[in-house]
Length: 216
Image (cartoon, rainbow, N blue to C red; front, top):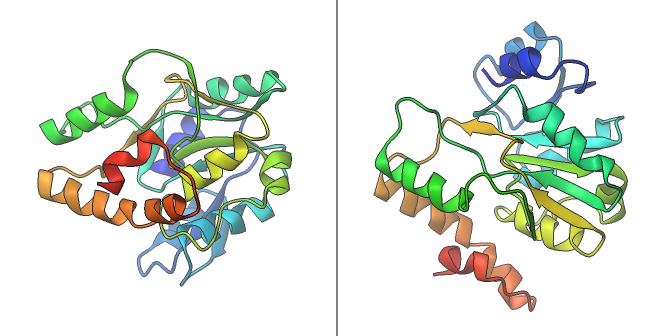
């Protein structure tokens, strides 16, 4: 579904698609080959290392990172690329939405909190790596994602990118995330996992109010 949505909505803006495979045992490789995209096996590593591996292969001035359980919308590629007409912007994106059908109150509530205030383009300090665009030259300058981080690699990247330019959250750079936690218990377990590397940032002297929920 992810690759099909890219094929349907990206037009000529997306020049290449790279699938980084974290050691899957299903038919991921066959799906990638069917869609004619580049396939890179990269098992037994962190998400950050997998993202970096894909970025090294990319030959374009912009990088757009997506999670495999996300699908892009019609306005995603045009809105994302347009942000970089401003030379001061080094990264752009938006928190993922949930599917319009078959969602739970837990998903709807978390989506509302993440995207509030809705419909507002604003400057931020970091963007979730499930849907983030980055200027490749700046990404390479700061060394990409920190591969020692199992989680929160996106927050860490954002804070370092913020020292080089502006990060913009624009709700028109819209994707749908199809596997957000559906229950309170699932959400709690996910936040416990996310919070692990938030403490690494705290011990290094970085404290952001946006990380407090995961820290708690």
